[in-house]
Image 1: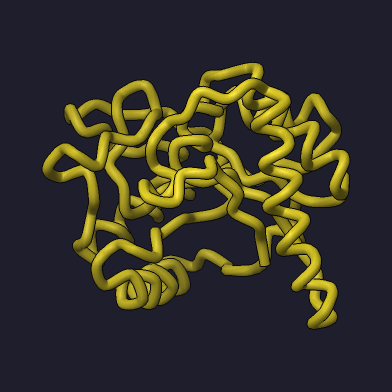
Image 2: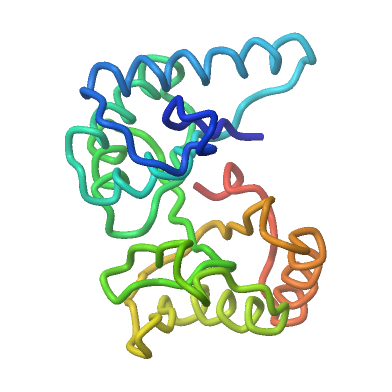
Length: 197
């Protein structure tokens, strides 16, 4: 179970960038994750990770100040939490520098730009909905550490620990089922990142 904090952008589902100071971003993360921690405690469960959402996640790829704010918030909340971040990102770097465990994430249902960022949802083809294509991309990302870019080039990802399929991607449940089946068929073990990070 993980927390998915983001910008306080209800109307835009957190997918529009907001201009916040590092302190404001840190406080929003603490506020949102703390709320989930309360529910987790009530039900006798535990939180495994924190993964910033939407525009906050995308900005933290390259923004040192935001990445540090995210890492500081997680450390203050619970330094045993794992941070989900793109490989080779400022966010992964900031989390590691703060002494946090980092799980490198791959987006199976999203197209990548050549710089490793995600293609804007406004562009046709940015969301991948074909089960076979999602499975092929995920297996290649895990085994080879690369993904084909939107322009046809290759993005070097490095190691991948976790795979994302967005819940609002059409047919997300069927895509996740196909992905799990395809990974198992390819001999890739599926388990919680807390078991190996």
